[in-house]
Length: 160
Image (cartoon, rainbow, N blue to C red; front, side, top):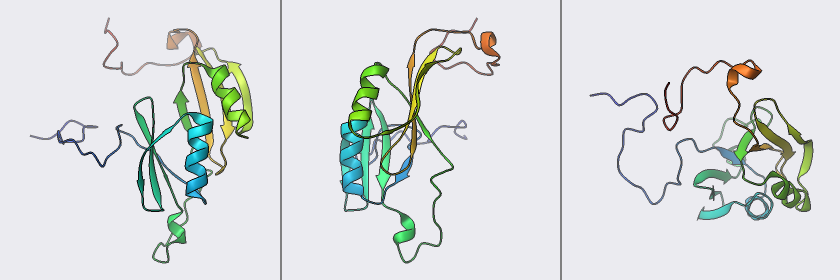
């Protein structure tokens, strides 16, 4: 029997693997400094360090891998672009979160703003040049009200 799309196909736990289904990996020139900064500025907790090239970070049960640039390895044949991605994180207290990020010298790209889809968001750039958007829910808004088309419901939402 085939596993459903999106399933991992495994029911085994692995203490070496961080929590989460989708786990972004971000590249930093100075891993030690980046890990300390991400923990201090954004509230991550370091879960596991793998030599001097990789660290698993956790925030609210989800994970991120911070790692060194693979192109610095003589065997690597590519350079990852930092301009082709961004990370969005849901937080409970956007104002407090922004204060902490700014105190740690995160560069504000977009100040906090309320959006018609029921979120208040701000965007910053971290010390490695990665773009992060932090979002706090301020209202439950039907996607139809702002032009969205709901194609599937989350498993925890009721179907009507």
